[in-house]
Each structure stands twice: as C-alpha cells, then as structure tokens.
Image (cartoon, rainbow over all chains, first blue to last red; front, top):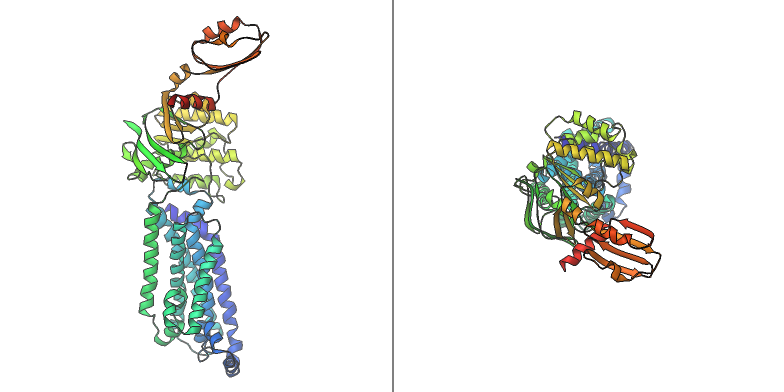
Length: 265
Length: 294
C-alpha cells in the first residue's frame, strides 16, 4: 500500500497534465460541432468531393458526421491517440524510471517481493488512468450536452468514451512489457511515441485499404465507433483480444521481472 | 550461527566482471571487511546477497535462509548502504525516510531523529538540493533506521568529510555493540583495518585471502625508502623479511615484514640522509597476495 501511494504521488503531476490535455482536446473538438451541424448539407457535399481513401483514413463517415454522436465518434479517434500516448508513456516509465533515476536499489533491498513491487506499480498506474478517464468522461458528457443539436443516446456516447480506458490499458501493458524487456531505457518518449504512432498509422492504412484483417493488428481499431453506434455494444472478438493482450503482457512482465538481474549503475 | 554463508558462489556476466567459486562465512556480531580493487567483484557479491542479481551457480545464505528464496524475509533485518546513493529527487529527506521506514513494521521515527542528529542531517531539505556528502548521510540514516541485525555497506565513506567519517564509524561501532553484524566493503585498507575483525581479500572475482585483521597487522609489510650519504651495496640489506629490494647508488627501497627492531638496528648502522617508512598501498598488498597465489 505504501508503494502504491508513493507511485501515485510520483505520477500526480503527469496525470494532471494529461487530464487537462484530454479535457481541453474534447472541449476544443466538440466546440467545433455547432459550426459543422449548422450547414450540415453543405458540409456533407463538401466532404463528398474529397477522395474516398482520405475520408476512410481519417475515419469520416459522411452519413453520421453531422449528428453529435457521429461527430464525437470521428473526433474520438484523435482523443484515443492522445490517451494511448499517455498510457504507453506511463507503462514504459514506471519500471524504467527506477533504473534511470537509479532508485531501483532502494526499492529492491526493501523487504518486499518483486511481484509486490510490480503489482503496486501497476495498480497505481491503473488508478491514475482510471481517474483520467473519469474526468475525461465527465468533460465529454457535459460538452456533448452543451453543443448537441438534437437528442442522442447518452449510453452510446459513454460506450464509445469508455473504450479510451480499454485502449489505454492495452498500451499501458504493452509499454510495461517493453520496459521489463529493455530495462535500460534512456528516454521514454521516442519508444512510446514511436509505438503509438506506428499502430495509429497501421490503423489508417487498414481503414483505407478496407482490409478487415488489419484491424487485429492495431488496438486503435479494436473498438469501432460505427459498430458501437449501431449495436450499442462492443465486438466480442476484439474485446477478448484486447483483454488477452493485456493479460499476456502483464503475466509475461511479472515472469521476466522476477528473474531479472538488476545491475549496479 | 553464521550470519552470512556464501557457498561456491559464481556469477558470470558480460566478459570480465563477475565472481568465481566464492566461499566464506561471516559470524554473528563481527565486523567483516571485504576488500579488493575496483572491479574485483565486491559489489557483485553484495548484490547477489541482496537478491538484486541471481547467482549463476552456488548459493548464499543469510541468517540461515536462502538469499533468493527467502529474500523479503531476510531483508527485514538488513540495512544496506550502496556506494552511490540516489533517491527520488523531488522528495524531502523526511518523506524519503518515512517511505523507507514504511517498509518495516515498526515505528522508526525516534531512531530517524537520533540518527539525523548524529549525522547532522537536515530533514526538511529536498533531496535534490543536497550535496553528495549529504546524500550519503541520507543513505546512512536510511540504512540504519530500522535497527537491522545485518548492515551491508558497499564503499560507504566516499563523499563524507573526515569528521563525518569519524562519526559514521563510531555509529557503526555502536551498532556493532548492540549486536549488529556488519559487512563492510571497501578498497581503502585503512578503513578496514580500523573497523574490522576479519577481512576477506578479493581480486578478479576470487577470494585470495581471509585473515584476522590482527594477523594481517602482524604480517604487515612496511615500505622502506632510504637515502644514504655513501653508496651502499645490496648485501647490506639482505635479511629475512626483505622483499623487492632495490639499490641504486645512494637510494634504497624495499618491503619489510618482521621484527621492526631488527631492521631499525640495521638501519642505524648506516649513515642516512633521509628515511621514509610507510604503509605499502593496497596495490602492493595485492601484488604480494597475488604473487603468493602463483
């Protein structure tokens, strides 16, 4: 418990910054909605002049974009990108910062198992992501209510928003696994940004080519807002796949870290 | 009971560094010196004892329990001071020590205050703002605040000024009287001589010698450097106990081990311009042990 609190305190600042960023992003993006909605037909016809591939790549669906849900589904792609960076950063740094800041000796010579250390760090990371999501969800709901141009199904908006947490958990565990494999990470940002953008671009390419199989290779496409809007539920296969990745990455991280040599600096 | 029991411990990693087939025991209540040049494997041994790295073969026991299997239980009673101290920079000293104490299920506040007073450490400063020596003090308090039964020190004196070094040694002696066993690793012979009961000398990952400090002192070599007024011949100083004799005109140098009076009377017969008698540095001691090995 002491470790969880200590970790939370350590992430406090960055969690706050990311919270603000995500809230600002959703406020900014949704505040543009009234402008688009006002001249809906004109906007749609303008979009129709654009190449099909571009529209698919950036995730625009012309039929729904002028409804608040459709618009939210569209901008959510960028919010999830931002959230993924937060999660991957967090995941990559929670263990590697102990090595980088040379505090691993302090923690590992205390009477605790390595399993307990990993657990404490993961719990703290999970809590800080959860808090981010709660604040984000509140901001998204309030903002949607402010800018809406008609009634919409709140439950669908919440369903879409919650996938932010799912995507973040996937990237958190991926980042964590990477940091366990390569303990001596000099700088976290290149790794996390690189990984996140690679997956994001895979997602865009997949959307353009219309190749369904590519969806399996990028967490950004596991939770399709269009599907959620239609069915008010998630796609089972992808939900399981996401959970599978999280579980495997975390279990592997435990196994590797327990046997790892922590070298002097 | 042996507090530390190292059995055929081997750790190989990379190319050169590591330890080979190391065995020794540390008894209850003693101050055990662990000495060797940089890169000899002192830290590797200590890190294995602490479960930071895993042995390639062999085993180590502390308080009769296996270092790897029972790591967390053992560590309750270990205080560790690493050679380089790094802590969470954005914390206050007080908070760091509190965090450290929170791992041990006892109230350490009184002890923290005592130790901070002895080491003259300001608890309200941020760790960021501390000098190297003051960080070291944080390390010392951090290592001792839970009144451990075994204190492991890895080259602990670097960065401490002589006064603090003195207080630190007194503190260690007090801890030792209280019943704590101490493993003291260093490459500075005088520290080890001052503090330790027994000493293990390690070089290139192997145990070269394990001796009582008192024996080591008796066997201690002195380095003599003489300048004579008249040229002397090397025969003048050929006697048992003299090693590495070098005579060049009026300068003579050699290592001597044996009755100091015999040597002094021999020297008294020579017309001297200058004389220097010094403790051989560690390098020379190691050379000596190293040559004996061959």
